[in-house]
Image (cartoon, rainbow, N blue to C red; front, side, top):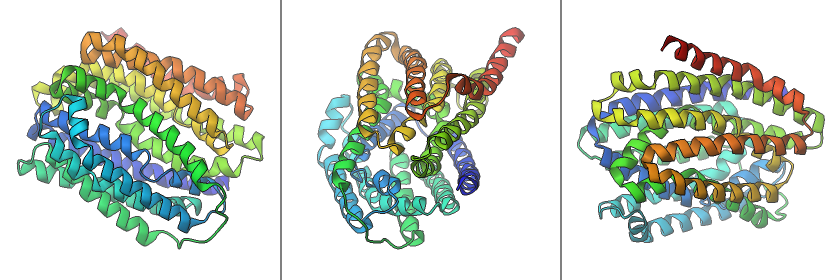
Length: 423
């Protein structure tokens, strides 16, 4: 089982590497064709879509993946109903979203155009779960990499034709359609199984995801609402760079680790060893990468992008700290889910959201850069607390956790120290 998971992890990492490359190349080609305001409008669409998308499958993707046996047909019906409901809410609620952001009227048609992607997400969710349950990680990696390349291509082509903010919305919609079709063609057949309390578990997953989505998008909403689409464009630009690697690695963890942890839920010793291995791997990847981006932020932005994007550099550096913490904090919640601790996961998400709301009230007074530094400070504290809870739940010794953490932390600290000495 561990060999299959390791092989799947390698394949998935390769696929995510392709996605990171497609993301950066696409952003590099896209940036000269968009203003900060147009990019900010696209970020507003993404905020609304991700909030509603957190419940677009009614949690069936996670529930069907966590269970060894599941009524796939019922899960599909629930998932499709959730996707249709989320799409309708986004389309009908577009005026309310635009008013909440205090955005120009041009945001409303963009939101309506993005709505079908939520229906497609509901369609694809259970197909992805069936592939994950069969440990078909190579197939998932191929589909996701192909979709990322196609999305980057369509975004750039639309931007070159002068579509502005529409280039991102339409490019993502085209990619969502391709991804849903590919997953359904390649997924194994759905099978009957015990229905159990699918809906009840799905509600808990949706509650957790919604709280997580609110948490993930709260900073962008605060910047967009309080400072306007131009400031949000710069902040979103910095966020996309800081979180680019993590945004690809996070789904890898959920795709590979959740099925593995779920199978190991009766073997706590093996679960703890698997958790420590994942912590060591993430520390070695995410922390040095964030440190390197912190060091190179100024010259990279100056070299790759038009001068107007240089204002995002201070935000980018602060968000590198948040990215490093988020990387270490990306898999503890999966242990809680695998052990059936849905309530703990939900309560953690709600407390996280409350803490973020308080700290954003302080950060917004200092502009978008203040929000970035506030997010970094909260991430440091939240990571320490979440890891402590997980060590207790999974039976991991404190000393063993520190041994897993220190190689990556040492490399990241050395990168920053060498830069400070050079300066």
